[in-house]
Length: 329
Image 1 (cartoon, rainbow, N blue to C red):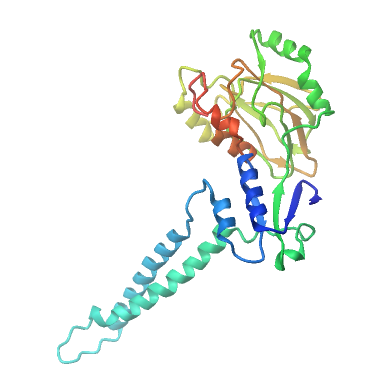
Image 2 (image 1 turned 180 degrees about the vertical axis):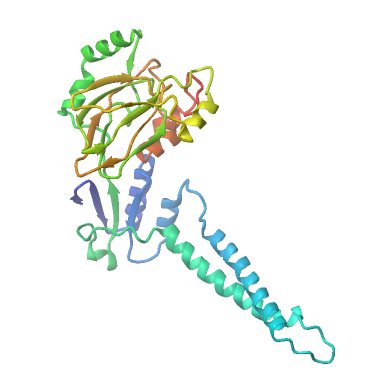
């Protein structure tokens, strides 16, 4: 097993062992797996396609075929009208003989559209770094490339120690005057940190947890402002009209904070819409985001988890219906 940066490359000799590994990784919530095989294999395809939507290539083929047929009709009809040949009072435009040309155009453009659909849906432009490719994958070995951008902090991490302190939980609870208050049970979202580089940004959103404590570690050279709309919704009212106004760049209720390194704030991300503006310059933005909740059982819904962290774990599906406030994620 080779390890490079934040990826792990597993190399296998037997396809059944590879398929078993794929199934176990999928069960643990890993969605974006890259598999290498010297030959096509339906067992690998079945293991990778579990739970996924059907291919969208067929829509490219259908639209291309319709376009091709229209091109064939226009080509034949307009040509006949532009260069009319009158023969024994027969009609200038005669569809039956044109069907061959229409059919050929339909097949041609439909085929090209299918090829285009394959390129787009296969994401062939995502190249694998050379150090993560083994030449044996073109001979007699199989491989899995797993992205290991871990959301779990190391045991000796200062941020983890900070989050685990009971004094910290008491401080947040006392500051908010919320009793009791719990550390979030979500294994991916309970104590995240955000690293934002040039052109990165967070769009407008709500959090799945009730409260977030943020500590800015490093400020971006430019941009990276924290913008929010306090209490734009509550457990009894989604307030979709006001949310829509903000999404349409109505800034009447928008507040902005230019945080400095070391600044600590506690905000109600569940009810306050918020975002981080685009990062500019060469300096990245680092921020710690420990999370707290009033309901010890509530965690992110599976779709929310996939959107934010790129995967959902079995516990997200198990607790999918536990959402005490009834709000849309």
